[in-house]
Image (cartoon, rainbow, N blue to C red; front, side):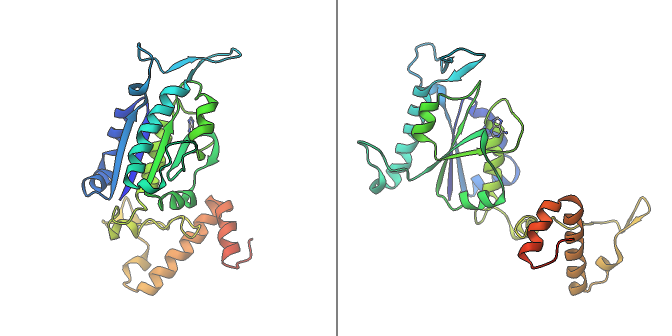
Length: 251
Ligand code: ADE
């Protein structure tokens, strides 16, 4: 069971997006649990305000430290209550749980990181909005700064959803066997080979003959060749990695 906690100003966005299709099934079967915590519920401001102007001037508003920190505390205490031995309430608490701040300034997310995060029992995601979050609360609670790519989005919700999807499908039980069979693309640094379903001929295009032969060894060999050729053509960077690991000369 993997427990995701998302600190956000838009809980309905992440809950809706993540309770669909395979992840919906995974939640129902209790392989994963997803909780969205509304940061606004923790503000001490009587008008429900969570943002303010930045010191030093400049455009835009910043998420304030207090509501973010108190939302984090509420989640952390819940997590620590499951494992009371690691909770130190006075002074610096031990961080038994990784806190991921999604930001374009972070390390770029990839499959290796997804595998790493999938080993955890609990993960907290902090989704920023406006121009960002007060630096002091980030210093206090964040363990990992992660980006989903070199472009800027309006908020951290979509990046958090992307990461939760990629991590969830690595949690044992979430994918059925037939689903995980088609998911090896990045495990060995090669892209997926082309695949075909019925009919045998569509708009004059035939399914490659070898796939109809029933010769599994030949089919495997063909698929491997296709994967290599495709990776070399479309993702030379990945091909280089694969070639290095497999002792092949890179051409
Ligand atoms: N927030 C805004 N843009 C982002 C990105 N590319 N990755 C992660 N978080 C973000």
